[in-house]
Each structure stands twice: as structure tokens, then as C-alpha cells.
Length: 132
Image (cartoon, rainbow, N blue to C red; front, side, top):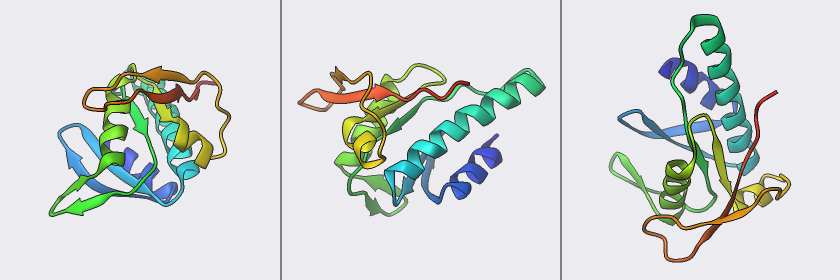
């Protein structure tokens, strides 16, 4: 499955900058590309599940901002928010911050304020629907 996900990153102009356990940190030059990649990943996993009876359930969090590379890891407020949005998502879901939705030209439907661990102020985010 990792190879399939990595192909998806490349298809949407994403660069994998870190891989920890079962998680990937991928950066994109455009928020729209990140959102489209997330949708594509969920659809590919659903197809794999239908064909083979199994595929991992993936949670995805997307935020925009500066990413700081340090040795082999990524850091910065944007990375922290994206990771916390990911943690807030249910399995097979995509949580996207208001800022990323706006930057990606997506509607702001379903926005809600989330209290995320380690972040003082609530973060506005919405789930991006990908089914169908």
C-alpha cells in the first residue's frame, strides 16, 4: 500500500518529507493539490478494499503554512496543526483547516471549531467529502 500512496503523492505534485511508523508527512506547493491528493488516496483505498477485501483505513489532516525541515524531520506550526487535524479525523476521513480550504478554492461548508491538543485557540476545519 505504501507504494500506491507514494504514486498518489507524485501524481498530485506532493513531496514526501518524512515517514514515521504508519504516517506520512507530505508537502505540496498548492493547497488544492493537497486536497485533491487526499481525495484520490481515499478513493484508491476504497477501490483496493473492494477488489482485495482489505486496505488500511487512513485519516488525513491538511493545513497550510511554512514547513521547517530539520535533519530528517519536519517542524513548524503548520505541521503541528496538520498532524492534530489528522488525529481529530475519523478513519477514512479528511479534515482540512479553513485556511487550506480557502487557499484550495474549496467551499467552507461544514466548518466547525475544534479544540486540538497543544494548540491554544480553536481551529476552524471541515471534513472534505470524497465518496461517490
